[in-house]
Length: 319
Image (cartoon, rainbow, N blue to C red; front, side, top):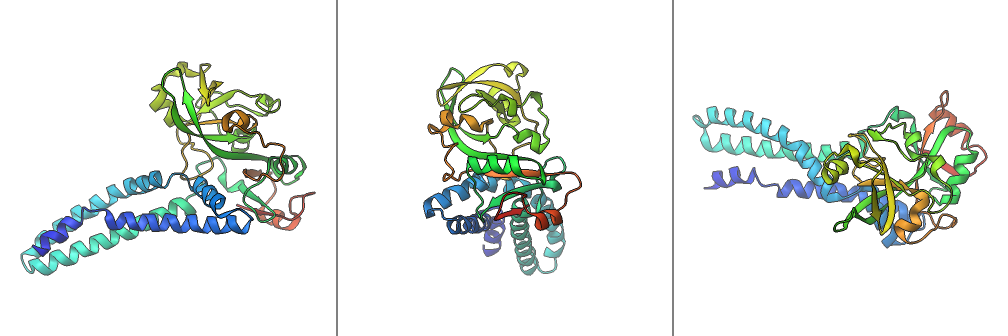
């Protein structure tokens, strides 16, 4: 009976789920500590950390799914070996093999989480020259700070800003909750991403607050919500009861600049008043933006460390 219980436990993911949860929570906790040190309240620090890492449930499901194929292949080999050994020492062989299989599987899952969070680079063109920017040892920036950095730096070809928000989307039927990337007009240009369908919004579309009523759909959301309809470009939809026009669809493997965050769409940052109900683009004290920059040709990490950000002072640049 004990042997059968051990075999049944092989198919239970309780321990693996705990390992994934612990690894994710550890990374989130480190981000929370950094945000609190930057002057955020504990509640805001926690919220921003969760936004940074995306939906933990989705992350856990992705890691579990990616690990399943490898685990099943190992299981098949172990079972064949165990079958031969059962004739000699059935109890010992089965117990040892199953214990080893579970241990290897758990370690593989933990490494998969670490790889996805820390080691795997973003799937973007020339990603080695993309840097995140922290000013005054804070990971979040205000929109006025972003404009200053964008216009006055001498090291980067471009600096883009982005944030996350939840919103309600409707195409005439029942509205549904979605996640939105709010991005500066140069976001896609800085990342050197090309649209799968239609076009992206750009800096020339920005004419001031709430002036750029356009959205770009993620490939996955386009497939699931619009069934891959190529005629979706030019159609209108409502985001928080404000009308936006669909300009295009992002490429299949592009999910933005965060590993574990899959948005339904991207919208211009200048329209945050319509999306979030408040416009804080002129408030230098409101730090809610992440910045990403592309290094100029001929520049290097050593140049950044030596020269700094040009005319700006007390900034820390880290990829």
